Image (cartoon, rainbow, N blue to C red):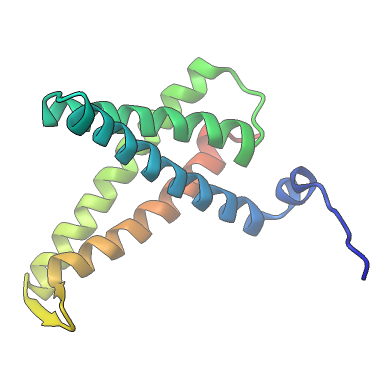
Length: 149
């Protein structure tokens, strides 16, 4: 059996699919960082739940910026300029996601069904679709604006 090792940097630089997969991995890591910080602050340190939540999200966004800059997009640009663009893109894409959730919830309704012990709701479906829109829009924004070559 022959094993061939191909450096990920060479693949990701020319392959948008691999870059998107890496972007999604960073997203999963950000979720763990965000939830971990919230748990640490609220449950272990006993801090205010809103402060814990805000710190969790700040840490998740910082982690996202650094991982996307270094690992996903391999950017050599300046940190300040890219960080400002990154936060701007986060805000724009979040508002887009919020609009999708609001529009879908209003159009399909906020129904709830219990199926095999799992609640399926109009808001839940709208939120999932909004997250897909956010992920695709934010990836495109970061690739074309924040970390453009």
